[in-house]
Length: 335
Ligand code: FES
Image 1: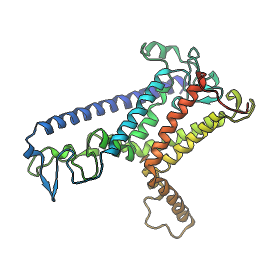
Image 2: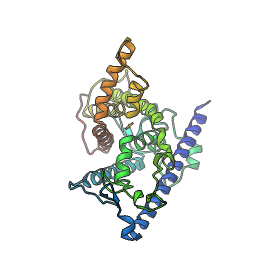
Image 3: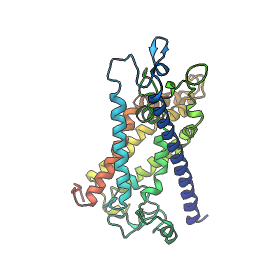
Image 4: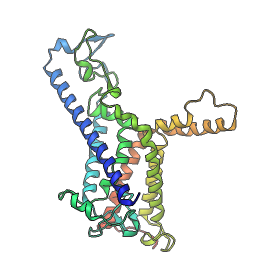
């Protein structure tokens, strides 16, 4: 298989995933919208019921703490990240400076050298943007390498157990918090009086690809670690350029490190390391697994923290490289 064929397969896979995800999102937003309408227009006696002494209904709760703060700030914070990431992806330029490559653009599959601040040709895996892609590329869309690698990290993050928790709460209100009335349960349907929750066995069944996207995420960590290594060589000329270190190198080294704390604290990783085992005692292999499992568990217990730190740092890394490339920040380095 030549590079063009590999690229065609990759683009088709990305397109299928993106279109499929888009359709699923559109359907779920439509469902959420419909549920809001039904909930708001339903008589109050249909909405509020007693369930074991607790009232039910959207947002109904006996909690007295400020439970709504967390879904509010996480929903808003993630929207900010999505807005910045999209803006940065749209630019298609200023993603390279000296030897620094923005993680939003890594790996660079094709490079358009006419764009300011584009990566050097030697750092593009498949060389220049081929003419046949230019011909089918939408004219209003910049030839940005960021679009070509987006699906991997996106698939991993959006199917993460923690991300699911927060976007089900913040965006789908399903439920908005622990012991707080959820949207689907407010609809009276059938003899039990509640609508059955099908969740991830129906519309959201694609969430089950998470365990497979984990392997993809590990590959990205390797690639981004290589980018950090390249950042130590003047001009990105590994072993032939002068070696040094800059603030940007530190930023780019922290990036895969934080991503690793998030990725290796994944629930799927924890199962991979410690699952399907009745006992950790005995053979050396079992004891090694136990030791690994304890480390993964430590990360797993802080999964939310590392999810946010790593996401913010990816955005910051792009911002730093972009600002250097635009001449707004002067990178301090030893070169
Ligand atoms: S559960 Fe969050 S990354 Fe796997």
